[in-house]
Image (tube, rainbow, N blue to C red):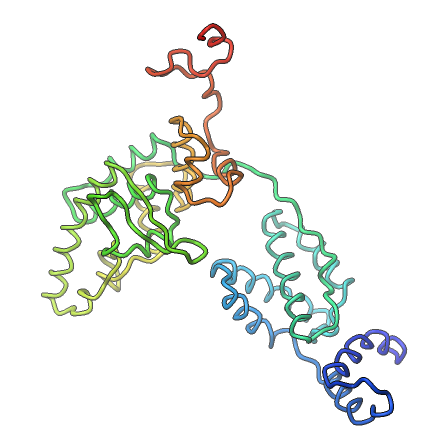
Length: 360
């Protein structure tokens, strides 16, 4: 890079550095200028500041899954830039980021590209706030539109199949039946159901309290089937804890979560999200389900089943703890087609507009 290009590139950063040192009068410029130039030509490498950015996002309350996704994308970006001999944050320009953004579409979905672009825009905006660079080279990157499509959703028949596969004569079957009932009846996310504390569960009032996504504590209601499943699990859990304590595992008595592991390397410990995923995958396989189960399929199933049963969208939104009704529509994309015309005992003609013309 020649001198003229270097001056143009770094003039904004130089002026900012001088301003930070309180330089307002050109007659008193020499020493501050030397310090500003030293700061300017002692650049910070990208890989050194990514961890600080991620910690700043955690401090700001960003969801841990999002922080981890941003970290993964940014490490890939740093490696991509390093291959092009761009290692310092001040050397990243719009052209390089446009080229990187275009390369993302080579085999990536729109959703993955969106996360990568959002990570880059957020990272370089933070660099501006931290005064590591003068302007955000990623601000012109366009965030792609992600098309809505139906995702894996458990159906009523699948839930019945899963519950039938739970051997409630065993402790594991009792726990798994309680998990399936609670997931489909409340729409709790995987992390939320793993965080539920035993002391917050009130079977008589049919509710529990849990810290939901975003950090706030919410009351979560459930109904008869989930209550009965939990009523079977609670004494089974207590018996298991006592068995572990008698076997010398004193820490088992300190576990506060509703659901615990029943085997593996760390038995009688709080159930983890990865542990929950493993439980559901094995249960789905043993039940003979062809499609692989994921934890969020139950949250979608909660919304779809409630909607198919006639629950108003506003009611589903409130029970699912969504901030707006658009999320309910997104989560019910897996709803069966043709429900308008399905006959039921309560609605012999379904919701057919023509069939109800003369109902008044």
